[in-house]
Length: 356
Ligand code: AOF
Ligand code: ZN
Image (cartoon, rainbow, N blue to C red):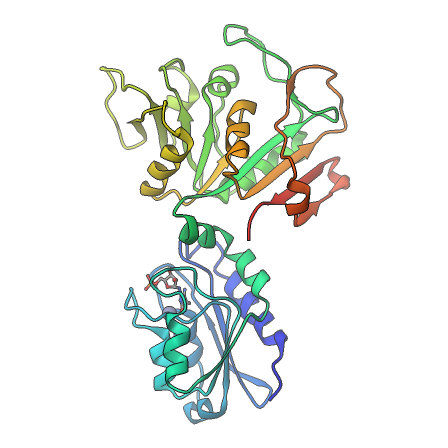
């Protein structure tokens, strides 16, 4: 029987049905093909529930057909006892003779082991069908597993001539220049619902007094994360209002501060590699994806360490002529995989990818 990538496309389509429900675990889809017909399919519907292969195999009415079928799956079948028994074992038990896999599982508990288990039982294994697409849909999971840190998305809006704001001083009562328009504003709020954490630096917190919520979109607010090395951010700022889970990184927790459910202060040594320290803490706090929203200094510190995976850059039609230079991703053009150019929104937004 010929291998047909259309079945893997179906796996990816099924996988995407659980968007948002499997976090931080991957979305996975599986299809069982017999005689060029799909006789069963399934996907991992929800974190902790049955894996894709289990649902696909259970959906096949006449199990005897499995003996001459091919199983397509968008991620290597697992080989470990997690919340469910190993899928590779189930495939062996059901005597499915051929398995087509989009990509190896980056989870060290699994990686390569599922494939070995299948091969040792004489099952034919084909790898790498629609691999790029399979990584793309689970890119947060891949970065988490490979680097043990949150997936990092940088986001900023800049004027046509490359400024992100006018120059302002902390004691200056001037609002930021608005570069985004109403529509892009909503899109940013959508992006916020897609991540678990949102990070800003001290100056942005003081100058903009942002809420960092996703109020212009439907979905959950991410945990707000703010750097306040010297405890300079006014206590009456929106970030400290206790309405949304918030983490504050400081070099020394003030005596009168008591951590609550929604407001947690964490002490770190800012003289060390503070970005890495922050990412470690956030990962421990189960924040597996992070949107970095500014300002320029903070964004540049992530870029300079090559600590980013994706960047949303909105370029306005307006010129500012002077101001704070926007961050610059040098040499990233080569790494750019996808551009979104939705001029109908009066937005030229670049989405750059920096990995894999
Ligand atoms: C598969 N099929 O559909 C998925 C897999 O905590 P557990 O037991 O659900 O295991 C989670 C790990 O299993 C996850 O980190 C990833 O390595 C793999 N996910 N594997 O064979 C699936 N969702
Ligand atoms: Zn599994």
